[in-house]
Length: 320
Length: 287
Image 1 (tube, one colour):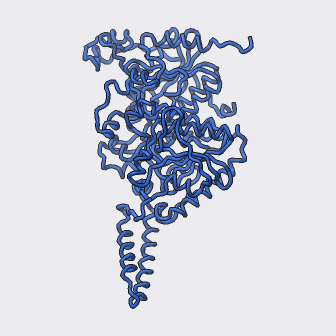
Image 2 (cartoon, rainbow over the protein chains, first blue to last red):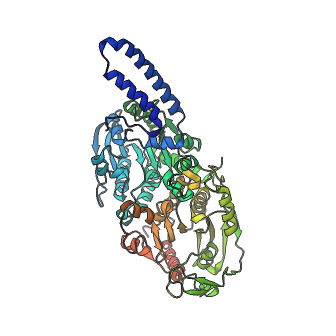
Image 3 (cartoon, each protein chain N blue to C red):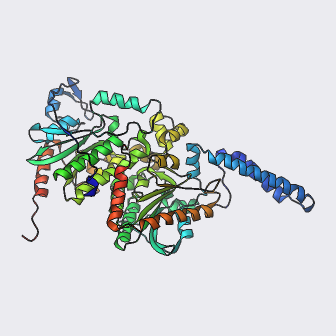
């Protein structure tokens, strides 16, 4: 993960304050320390206020930027922090291994779980290795295989959604990207174990819903989930790639919007300033919320779990 | 099954026979540019008599072509929330819906009918590409769910004829959810061991291809149909290279193991009936 804080465009005032605080802290000599400390405390208060002002009213487009922030905790970070004895499992046993999807068995608070997550990587080398978090058909077929495995041994499934979308390319098309996604959606409905999907960053269209036909759909406070990227929507409907802000607003892609539509069951709060500033705290809190839902779902019988999922999706988008 | 409890039975209405008045006396084949007399084209099921190109076939014509004696009843279109996002781009979505309805005389991009094929009762659903590119929103998703439920209730097979650019983005996340809901619809057929046959026509892309279209027990494609997940333009921009000849066409998909057969429109009804005969002729275990 990147050590240096990366500031988003709209965070410029925060960046300026942070830089000033750093300067004061680094040039501090003992004589001036007292005055400086007071000044630093003042500035820190200001930063806090600014963060609050910014992050309590992020625009949809700003949320898109936060959801894609390079420092945001990714699937591997959740696995490392929440899962003990993680045993990564590779391959679709048909064609290959796609590291855009990481998955495996491990203990979550003592309960064996199957974790299936989309992983974007955090630097150039790992981004390439993880295919920039855009799964190919073999990735989705691997996810499907892991779901089957979990179901076979009565192990709950936690999926972590974080993708710009399924990989668009020749290999993807010739190996049946559409079929792979469709089958993954279908597989989710067949599960007779608790299945919880968490959108941790970017929920990009069909590539995301493949891992989200779950009993519970949770979203991080500043994550997004959309039928199309704001860029794609802007270029198709506005015929203007720069209309991304308008498109982001029109698409209603924030966690808050989706909660209103009844698509998302619970929004997982992020510390003020976003998950990318407070990574450990975010992941830990997300773990608590996932655990709460898992505990509830474990009370349902296998047949009821499948029924619960079907009813949830059938009711979705119907007139009340 | 429990999920049928809140099922609202779609009303059937008898399809009125309408006279086909070709919009233009002459049509031009988009592939070979040949000028074809409108009535000749209709008689040839909108397949170019010169080059064999399969042009778009509107739902009514598709139903008439497939059902026995051209007889069928429409399933009533489902009631869904209109314009759930209050969506507006350069034009507002409601006005797009209105003009699509005026143009096509259908409520939305999916219509289903019940009738017989080779004597078998069957539900056929057809996507209307002329209605906002056949895109899938609430109405299409719910239409497919109800068509599947109707088929399960009558214990008859389901045939879905696809033609769609993908999800209807003006309905945002709710259109994406239709990928899950239509998958669930065809799962009901599978759970009840009733055949679901997908007939993929030009074009079938995006969220429609990545859900129910690719989940048929049998998958048929019309010749030369574009069947894709990602758009060719997007792929080209991503890889910055030319695409192979025939990329994402029905023949390419068959070669890569994604469709069972490619069937000329003239043979489609007969092939479907044979399949229904075969899939319906199951033996009783132990006899």
